[in-house]
Length: 386
Image (cartoon, rainbow, N blue to C red):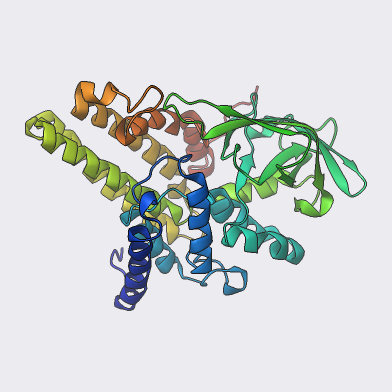
């Protein structure tokens, strides 16, 4: 495996690092090192705009739609430099990383022209309407309905665990458009504006003290038929295509974020003397080795256009690794890690520990991931469906 980048990419890396450091040392200094998804929302909207104007927001997209037409290697480099510069989490990430690529792959030219520029320039924030109270890992069990009336759909139902649901401008929704259909049949993929009567988001307060997620109620909300991606009834195909983009270059940025967290744990261990504890030192070494393995598997996954069975292991691996990292953080910090910044919030490492509890649940539980590995990756018989 070639683990080094070609020499000619050094100039691209230097340009990306230079721009990021200039911005995060200047007009966006307050955002550097921010880890919360919900702090400084307006400033982070401005950050999305700045990224778009400099064509750093969607570097892998065609230039026609606000990108740079960057290669996979260049996309990886920018993702790494973004995390290395301790730039803030992207409030536009669901549009940038999931919906935008889906539109590029399956949208009409009219849809691309209507939606992609606003995503690329931070003018539209998106949320995802997949999970429901009775349809989490079992996405095919969605109950939200959309009936067609002329040139629009009338949407009724509920979505939950909706990231950015309280601030999003649009939501992409998987809804049942064929009455009486079951499972993954009869679904459609609709783009629904949030700012309209019949859409009510309510915050879900997490144990970290934040409210990154929302539950969203649709009561007679409207979506135009021209804002459906794919044919009516092909929503499952579109939804699965979108989920495939979760294994994109953002995985490398995620790993750089993990590296920052591990470095913070190491610094804490040195500061409070835990670095002298041989068991703690061994766990830190184990975390370091696990992160290296994650990087190599991520690079292999990105270089495999066929998405081989090995790619199915990625989510299970990183969620287990990150959960263990959170436990390491708390063991290193001891009682200090149990004390909040204020009555409602904890610092970044404690918040990381608390959030890592959900890593093994969202985007498919560990049990679901093991089924995927066995059935799709290894070709074993499907689990009986009751």
